[in-house]
Image 1 (cartoon, rainbow, N blue to C red):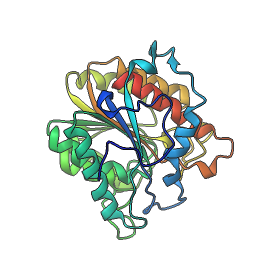
Image 2 (cartoon, rainbow, N blue to C red; image 1 turned 90 degrees about the horizontal axis):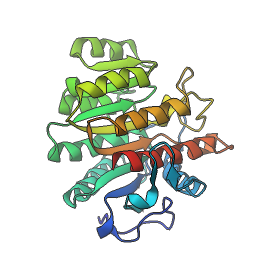
Image 3 (cartoon, one colour; image 1 turned 180 degrees about the vertical axis):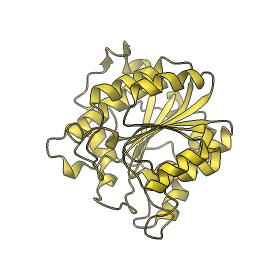
Length: 289
């Protein structure tokens, strides 16, 4: 499977047509085969691309213009519908190729399970990596209804691969009692409910380290992002998430890749979720690449 040619006609605003000149590759992971509540996140990547056309190309937050960051939008990976394991294998192989060519991977989901094969590929190249996880849900289950491949399990799988002491979760406000007990027993860092202030402190600890950042759109309160599969009341604002992205950009961590997942456009006829998501992607490109 090639990563250097687009699979769809829709691209993020100002995408470079020449892969060789790009620092980053945007790619979609249109998978929602294991969701436990509302499906539809497989339509997120293309709707985020469409919403990006309404963005300004200049960011006053970063004081940068998108023309200053070369990136190539490869479209969505063609995944085998309904087959989680094969889909994950495809994603891992795809990201491995992006890394082999020295590009920064920026993935658009899709359910949160798609982050797991990305981390497997990242870990092959960066065995000393850490992860920043921004989400409403702990995602620390070992299985859901008997299935180990679930959007409820990716962070637990990541902990098993890179070590729980290298995983830092923020904004968490939902999960089983056993998940929160795992955090206590393993020594993993988790900031409940909040993002910006605990992130500010953790970034000092992570200075100089290679860090992957995964953002689940449901970290936002449903008032700001109703278009997601498992909305959870009590979340942060869009302004707070933008501030978190800026904090990471202006820190001493080395961001090696990122993703934004769980945008399900069908549940938001106002399109405020995809509009917000496209702005976050712009800031991620300008601040982290």
